[in-house]
View 1 (spheres, rainbow, N blue to C red):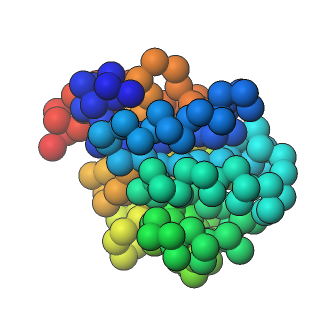
View 2: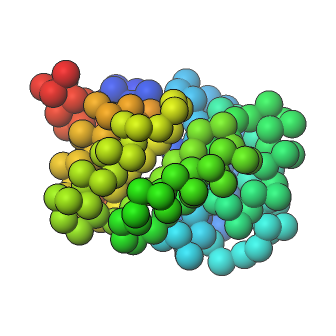
View 3: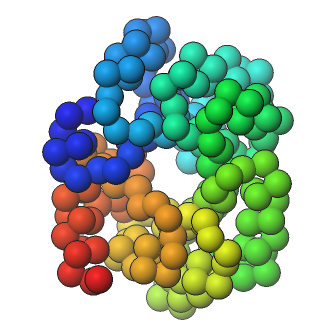
Length: 197
């Protein structure tokens, strides 16, 4: 975790669905020592992660981390858990992941649904062409802040560095191992953004 701060990260995402079950028992205590704000995420298999349980299992997995979390990432299928997360004083990143780009009106409808249970809507799409990327950039630029958009996969991955210039609030990067294909290391993304701004 000190490496994240040294690399220039502003937040750390803890992907609980990627941890071996045996490691989860002691993790909340270890995270109390982390200086950077934490995003706690349990990504479902349906949206690119490894978690296969339902809302009750999701809530049981997340609850021990609420005392150390600044944000919890919640997919729509687990949105019934959002009021309890917010009641604990933790902000909700309401997320949606799809492997293909959607039309702008579909993106607008998804954003509206995410805003019904989250503080920060996050939409991650696959981008197959530069026209797809232009659709995502236009959508991001036209929305009311705050919003987070990102790209799934390697295709047009350079768009990850453009989206913050169009008002996306977060850029997901890595320190040692990517959590998903197409991510840049934190240091490289810092350099890219400094060159573009």
